[in-house]
Each structure stands twice: as C-alpha cells, then as structure tokens.
Image 1: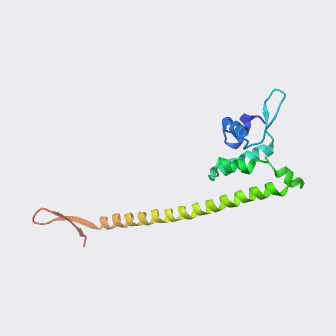
Image 2 (image 1 turned 135 degrees about the vertical axis):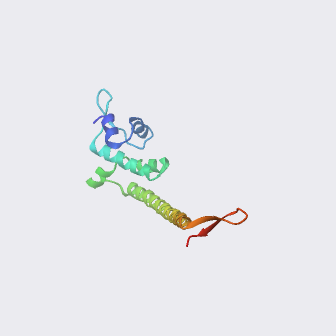
Image 3 (image 1 turned 90 degrees about the vertical axis):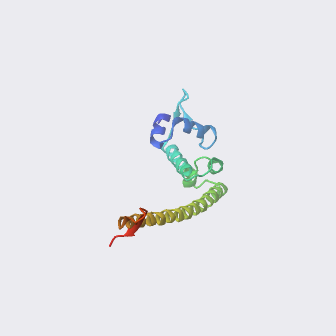
Length: 147
C-alpha cells in the first residue's frame, strides 16, 4: 500500500510517517522503481505500535532508542535476533511502564480530589435548597433552615 493508504490505516499523517522515516524512528520503506513508498502489513503494525508509544508519552529520544534496530518481530519469530536489542527494548518499556503507573496513581488521586469537591458542592446545593432567606427587623438577610 502507498503512504496515503498507510496514513488512513494508522491515523497518522503522511507528513508524520515521512518524519518518522527521516528521523530513523521507522526503518526505510521499500520503494517502487519510481520512488513510491510501499508499506507492508508489518510496516503498518510497527507504525501503530509507534503511535501507541507516542500516545503514552514516550519521548522521541526513547522511541528512537527503542526502534534503532527497526522492526524486529520477523527476526524474533525466525529466531535470528541477537538478545541485546531485545534487552534494550525491554528496559525501555519497563522504565516507561513504571512512569505510566506513577502517572496512573497521580491521576487516581486527582480524580478522588475532584470527586470530593463534587460531593461537597452537591451537598452545599442540596442544603441550600433546604434553606430560605429571612429578613430581620433591620432588613438584613439571613439563611435559615426550612422547618
């Protein structure tokens, strides 16, 4: 498939795919004699994985380190992949996973805080519905609980 089709399949722009290729995040794409990029299904899967890594907040620097050996799935499946690139990828992913888990804990705490504020304000409004404004002899307003 061509770059337009690859962009449609991955949700990436053609510009982003070209950037990934130029910057070394994505291996050089096979081309026709006329220079048109030809993407395989493995290329699409690799681009989708890069997209997922980017969505998780992995830095471009870490993505570059992760992908420096290109798509290694075929070599892994064939059993002819050196272990060091696999170890390096595993280290990057484990480190990133820890960062994501920390973000998850922080987000959970923030969600709890927001929930507490929501509860507080809802209780306030409910209490407000049960109060009425009365005026004293000087004309000052006071909120009193309805009886």
